[in-house]
Structures are given as structure tokens and as C-alpha cells.
Length: 88
Image (cartoon, rainbow, N blue to C red; front, top):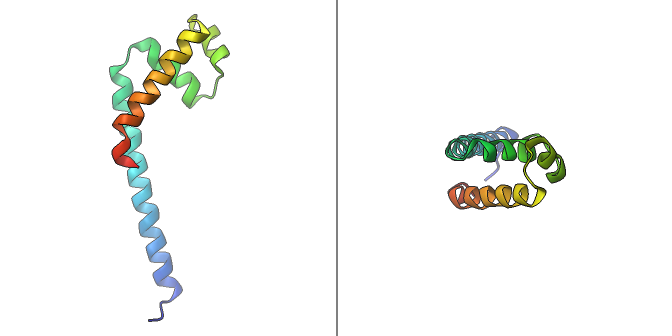
């Protein structure tokens, strides 16, 4: 059965839409999970994951030791991975 380019584009559009919806749902879930965290942990996650600061920079900004920043950050990442496993 021969399919035209229109069919290919429709499938791609449907896949892209599904991917965007899934990403949006995951993003909303991350926001919900962050809201449950202490304000300091929210700030650490925001600075590291969303703004791209290094652990050293996050430590300086927050006044929390670099080791504690790493521990808190990776603890949140583990929680989020567990909670978001349905979106993979």
C-alpha cells in the first residue's frame, strides 16, 4: 500500500503532539513535586537544573555547603525519576 507524504506528516504531527503533551504533563508533575519540597531545596533545584549554575555557584548563592547542595539536588532528582517513571 502506497502512502503519500501527507500520511507521513500526519503521523509525525500526531507523534509530536503526543510527545509535547507527555512533556507538559511531566513538567507539571515536576512543579507539583517541587512545591512539596522545602523552599531551600526548591531554590537549589531551580538554580542547578533550570538555570544551569554549578554546584559551587549554587553553594555560594544559597550559603549551603557544596556537599549538602549535591546531596539535596540528587535526592530530589531520584524522587522525581521515581515519580516520573510513568512518563518514559
